[in-house]
Image (cartoon, rainbow, N blue to C red):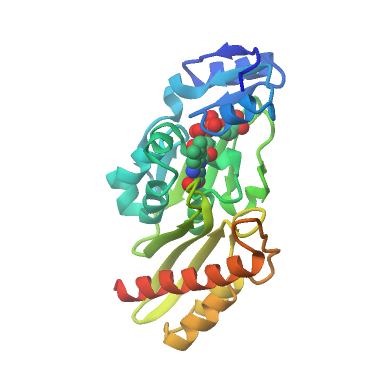
Length: 284
Ligand SMILES: Cc1cc2nc3c(=O)[nH]c(=O)nc-3n(C[C@H](O)[C@H](O)[C@H](O)COP(=O)(O)OP(=O)(O)OC[C@H]3O[C@@H](n4cnc5c(N)ncnc54)[C@H](O)[C@@H]3O)c2cc1C
């Protein structure tokens, strides 16, 4: 497994990066290289040019801006897992990042790379869905924000145009919510066999609003709308916990593979959702 030949660019600004990509049709952005380089080594991708984002200052950092948490696209998983602002405003994102792969992967891989790659078993897509985050992108045509709910379209497929680069992920700051992410990792890769991200806002002992997102079980991460509808406005009784967890994969084509059949994944998704909700109920 060797890499073919390609042009390599290392811009220091976003404008320069976008210009270099325009000048090299078919170029790919390079972030941590944890997913792209294996694809190139296996000859599943052969871009004529790589535009390395490592030196682009505009994509770095985590900060509070107006009423959102702004997370630069080049933020690595290890930094996300430990950053105090992420812990304060988006603790489930920190929890998800802390469970990605192994220390080597967490120290190279980035949030932008993970979301753009859109592996159906990746952790961060479920996290950004449950947080109602927006993916901020730039291209020669300007900038736009893509709501996480419309970003993941299929296996390794997103709403990104080929010339768009993720600049940041913004997470609305919406006051106190209880959040959690739990996954059943594949023992070899660490990817999610099932991963559940949940963020609940409470009013007294009732769930005022619920966001529950699932990864690992279908061709892309998704929001569990039936579960959310059942929880909203209700007291989280044991009976409701069981009912809401049991429908978490409703409406989805659950996939099976050599490691986990569709039936097993569906069951595991229900059990994991119940555990996450029990944890959030006890967390008050
Ligand atoms: C052994 C191993 C185990 C892993 N385990 C897990 C796991 O348990 N959970 C998990 O979620 N992930 C896992 N991963 C994947 C890891 O999270 C990667 O970091 C991630 O998928 C890709 O991020 P990257 O920064 O390395 O992107 P790269 O590999 O550099 O790029 C990936 C893709 O995204 C594009 N891209 C990169 N940055 C941008 C940007 N800013 N804008 C637009 N497009 C961009 C690239 O062009 C490429 O198509 C694992 C990877 C490995 C190698």
